[in-house]
Length: 378
Image (tube, rainbow, N blue to C red; front, side):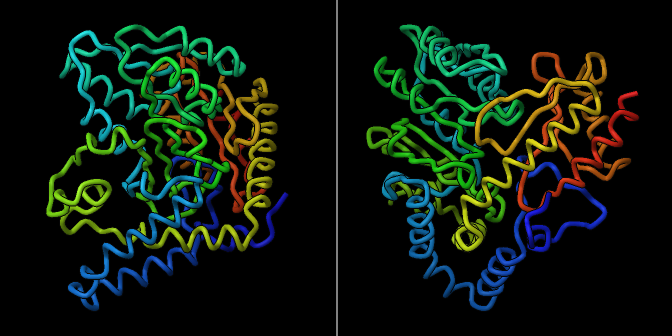
């Protein structure tokens, strides 16, 4: 199985099978060239660059927002989804005993931020367990049941990182909106993976990374905020643009390098030239193939966590990686001894090996992992 010309668009080491697009993305060569040209332009005349930068950021923001079905006026460019979580928590006013609801699929950095926030404010983090194969009705009911009179915010993934679980985010948003609970959608994987239709989701806060399935340079994300919250969103770093308010106060801080944001439209141009539906279909197909051959090789079940998701997980046998140290060690051995890069996470005391599909992945990459993994697992 191969996407013609897909591998050649990227600069991978030919000795490596890269099955971990979901962690850091991968930047295609044409997008890297566009990014490099912008870096050259900065150094050719930094003052001229600075004069033109606000208008160019605004143009990039509008292009990315339109791609996501979001009102550009609602959006700000930021580094990543974790930054959006920090911005929302930084701007949230809570009292001791107020609650924030999330699920046991939440991203590790988000959970860390919530724990620190709770320790500082006295807020309570309520974690809702959701099974890997839970249906949409079950998910919505579980989150609705977790709401209490003192719930001040819910944070829910669209596609969870560790488990690749797809959440019915529009239904969740509708239920929480009816209950008067603000919702932050962590859609880190959504841009490029799905047609997001952010405005239709109707969440109070929504954030998606373009440096994953959107193929943009890293540290490129878009955050959308409902009108009633925009004045309360305070930047984590106060700089010269602070008096301008949303979104400039969030986007412009001193000499931070914003060239990745300006190169992101080149990534969308490339996706459109390849055929977005074609890229998505192949990515899902090759991820499913990889999951199947690896699961068969180690005698694991084939788990479906969401239709259309180009990431799949394979549960490893009990005891193989029982703690984070063992997980880190095994992930490194797979990369170094097999030449295959994957992600590996502990979820409910089970080590979930996650593989990602993308146009540079071929069936031989999955076959390579399937052939070598049983030996490493003993």
